[in-house]
Image (cartoon, rainbow, N blue to C red; front, top):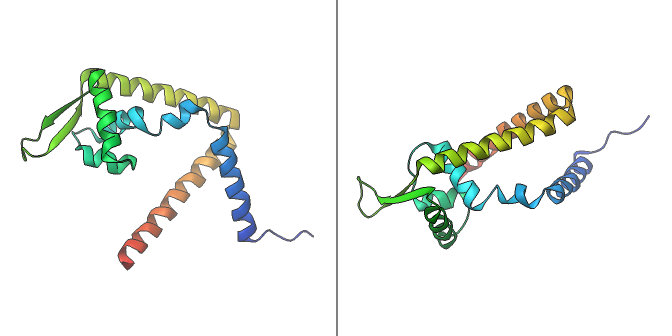
Length: 151
């Protein structure tokens, strides 16, 4: 009878697989998680204007990087920046109609891409993957809440 692997052994294997997963991502996939696309999708999900600082916190990028991203998006007509009505010192970023349409196009494209991937996994594996990812999110959020409360 074979011994079950330890959690340390499983952790090492998972970390190797995650490195492999990152290596298998195409540049388009990687770029969609940061930069202009990530900013558009963040604003779309928020549904309300956000400050450049909030966008930077969400993307974990510097204020200089956010400024460059916003300048590019503004030049493309996808976002607007305006002073906040509540605090004239603060700037709020909003999607334009073209920005909302682009975010929806990206969302539809992502959904199709992920659906193709899930179909390759098959129904059983896709269902298990979703269950495990959901459970992982719950565990990590609970841990973060506990660690935040302990500070």
